[in-house]
Length: 320
Image (cartoon, rainbow, N blue to C red; front, side, top):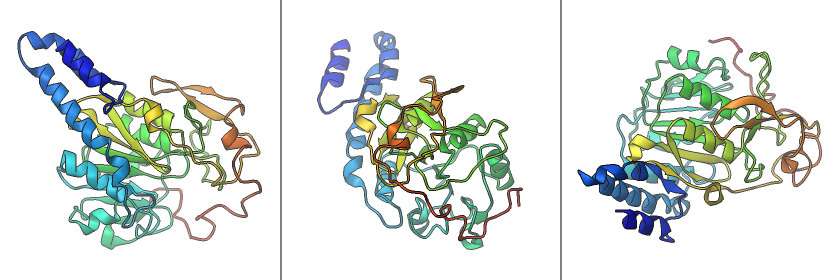
């Protein structure tokens, strides 16, 4: 068994850092085939996960997410075909669940939320969501604790939003969350939450938004999810028990960087530093570092107005 493990991990086709459950179960091999089963599951998962970059295609999504989502569920199956997605605008374009509606997913029991749009036909609720009210909204709209797919896109506090959902006991089988690809590979950072946990700010069109891929990787690891793929917009993770194994890819295999798309953050606002444990321990960078957020590679100039929100009437901050 030890030789089989070494062979699997050394095979150039399987570049993942460790398949920890297999290692943890080696001691059971003397009495049963649990470890062999685990290795087989890991090998199977690795084989299709590595094909995800070649399965990116769009019907309604922004950057190939429709194909990635389709490939994931083709391999792990569905249970209830329920999705929750917020930050969707009208969910006709650049929406990660619009295609799912067209292929038989459960629209009635799924949930869409956006600050500027409402559509009862697809259960799109016009509400404002922040990390401090997202659980209230989930309760109000009767989101189940376990469901197939969650997609997070707030253009702002995505890391803290997802932490709140997972800390609240929600366990989607698959998660897609927006990231900020301006960050460097080894930066585990997010924009800072307000000190009073009330004065949240909408995205101002600069590079000061979202979180890095590494920060999301730490968060997924903390809650038992395998980060399987990122493109320039979103990262995708699958619950370990759904995969039947525990896969942790090195950030060198996952990371992509795409600078220049947004205006620089000339004010050098501080960024939260996310600990490898997957917690934010209160540390920030004091406005130092992260040059591709603050002054290098980003667009120079000032955004004329905040994207989306100044052209589209928004819901009230209070729960509707």
